[in-house]
View (tube, rainbow, N blue to C red):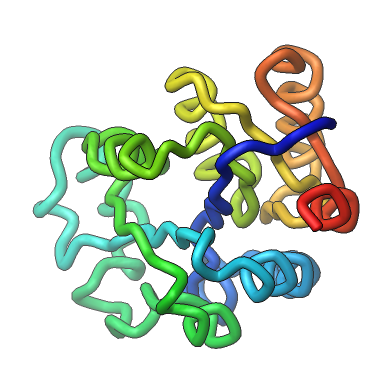
Length: 194
């Protein structure tokens, strides 16, 4: 693997709405939490937690996002208590010095705020964890590749509600993006960064 460089841990959407009993519950989240807690706990000042924000009403969103939230009306702010956008409690306690970054789309790159922050800190490597592998993690990873970051996905620290597409996403990332991305186990990464 070699030298890691100036890195940040970008932990995707480890929020109560996915960890608890909602229509978007991801049962695997409990299985990957210890690995994420280990990385974030050792390196809280290098950790940025993304949070997927919900609109108050479906009509607050543009285009196909409006249709999306009409389907998932029970996941709008009108119906779901605000606290469900919060990080899982074991991770929330790390902020600060860890930070959170709020987004309204799968990707944290779309609104243009995150990349300049990372560039100002001279970050060249992103270590990605969280959920879901085949949705927000995938969007985060592909955007990071497009922006020329070195990307390390901790494969035992990402999860999905769908096993098949989780596996397919990791296979896709490994097979098609091997020059720009590394898949790694959490323990191996922690050993390298010491």
